[in-house]
Length: 485
Length: 80
Image (tube, rainbow over the protein chains, first blue to last red):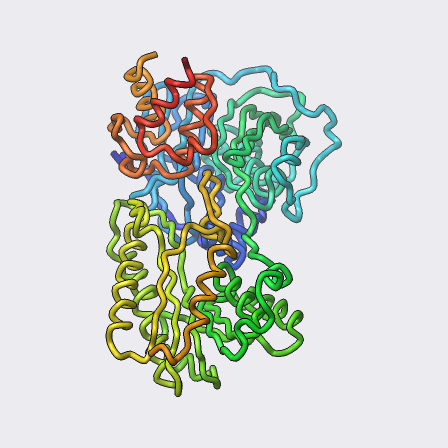
């Protein structure tokens, strides 16, 4: 069902910069690996519109666009990650339309439909009439859903046309350079203006029109917002296009309870005397655990693999409140040798919290991907065991470790089977570490779905309050000492 | 509309959304069993059903539908 492959390519980081300059869409999800890490994509993704214009160019180059293009309909269904190989597959072609897909690793990421006919003449959509109100593009605008409902304005196409003309020459020939630029500007509309910073481009459907009034700008207004899905629909018109855009307002990076908030529910000396290593402590549940333990008078060492700034910011927050050196930061990658990395500790650790993780919700072809299981096993099983082994070996006292498992083991969602399998393996490892004389006592609990960067999807999903879920667990873990062994 | 009419409409909508004419939904079909029917396309599917039939699902319903049959049943109830 994948059709005939007409072309393939990878988009690299230079291509990201190239298209951002052409279009004006500098949204961090495309440009900044660290910022993208804290989105549901988990890494930088290709501008969907860039991929579409490339596809349109290749369709035209391959002689697929034989009639006058009347409409362009695009649906973005998956992310295209930077450096992944994209295939342009022709799915259907007749005298009235073409249907093509952009496919990565067997997954359809983008569905592109071109319809043929004669361009419409009139512009019927009511838009803001004042052309002078051209919205600013940089930096990406921050709005919430209520603010989005009132958004309207014009985006300059002339500037984009100057930059883009000739970059997609076959697309220029097929639909006109002005319309190519107008489509590129739709990327800027969603990525920089509305919804702006925290946007996901869902789809667009446009007619190609002869519009003599607004050749140099695309006007937009929000026609609908839907808070259930954090979805925004916009009318767009101008520069030879007219139609609608669907976008989503994704969640901003999820911040956990502040140290001040945590301090209200934790007694000042509740965890005094403990030295706690929190692997994966720079954000999310690890960062929250660090605040709880420090608020209770414990000393914490948080590790990061890539998020150094997040970890340092956390340490600053904790130390700012405690007034002493209650939080240290070290780099630690659970996929690398544990012993050499943990030499940097220079102190004995009484408790370990293991929140090391990677992106859980993956785009994948097929229900089971063995390489993904390998990746998860390395982090959730081998990484945990190695860390415990080295810590307990270097310590005069026994180690109390916490292993966060998941209710996915109970629910068994098909989409994350590899993750669930790895966590099950982790549970079995923990049970046997407790049975064997490993000088480590492991506490395991299956955490419910909690609001973190990973679980913050636009689709409705019930999540529990992280502090409510974690605090009893931390109290249980901290109450255990080496005497229990 | 009968339940079977609604099911046929759902099949048409999901085929169109996923560009896959091989899909045939049954009352027992779970979203995870249909290739590419991920959370984003679930939203698009619900939105398309709402536009097509003039109904509106609540968040709790959207979260809790376990299979296509549950969506059909809720739709039928709303159309009454």
